Length: 240
Image 1 (cartoon, rainbow, N blue to C red):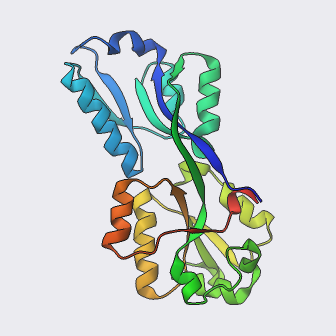
Image 2: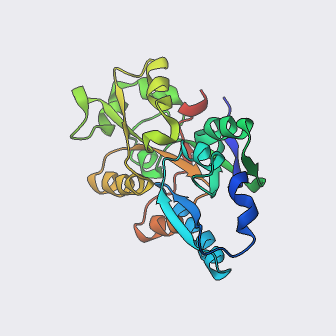
């Protein structure tokens, strides 16, 4: 069973816009997208601030994290960063193969993404057998992960926003024969994942959420501030 270890593309830029970026141009703005996770948003404004310090006009637009690469290719968006391969690799490669994009290389960081659970799930004995995914087949495990919105008393897994991986995790749950005991809910944003960690610990119930590494310093501080256990345990549903 392999872990998802993928590349993080450092920077993607539109060929249409490349010529004008190196020179200050206050008439036509450099368009930088923002998505639905905090590190991407923070870095968008850092990159934009650098361009503004060079005398450029910068415009920030909220953009779909899958469709943005086609937008870059045709020149509607200028530049993007944090291209997570497992989530956006297909959309990125499709646009790149059409021409019109410049890929400025991979980030040196290697990433791990999967569904994971906090240490207190093990400490409290909420699902004996984890991280082996077959432990999820036990009804006595699933009942410890239910929430008020759980249909038919099923255990809940909280995925990231649906734009990240589509229906990958629900498909995996069904393919592994877990659909009678578990259901998958999509979070509205990355912040909702961290909020779920805090809520589950306070309520004394188990939780399985989408998680990734490396974490940003902001997420690490969230863990420290709210005394959350680090997500060191993974169920490996993404590559079973």
